[in-house]
Length: 114
Image (cartoon, rainbow, N blue to C red):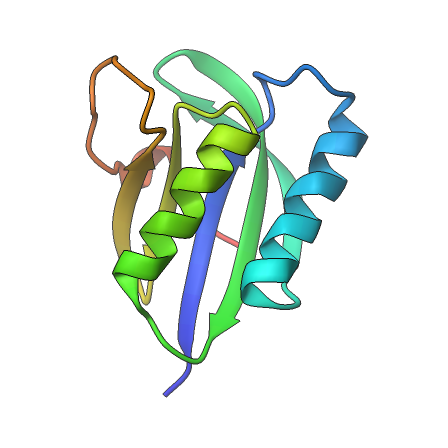
């Protein structure tokens, strides 16, 4: 059975041009997970609307611990408070280790599906 990782990475809080950020996210995910499909969506969160990088990545293994570690580093690299993701339909949140705000739970209502 193929495992599927879906994730949302907000593009609002960036210091780079959006195109550069998208290329950076794509290359980072490709390095860690391989080729994947993505699209840019108009996402929404408690803070309002936000352009969002939405990815769908087939995985050979659904190692949650490894995925969390990789996404924590991505939170740091891309100045994200958190990244929302799903594996095989189950939702998770991973937070930037430096984030001190509220650690909210995954909410499917704010998650853009591929």
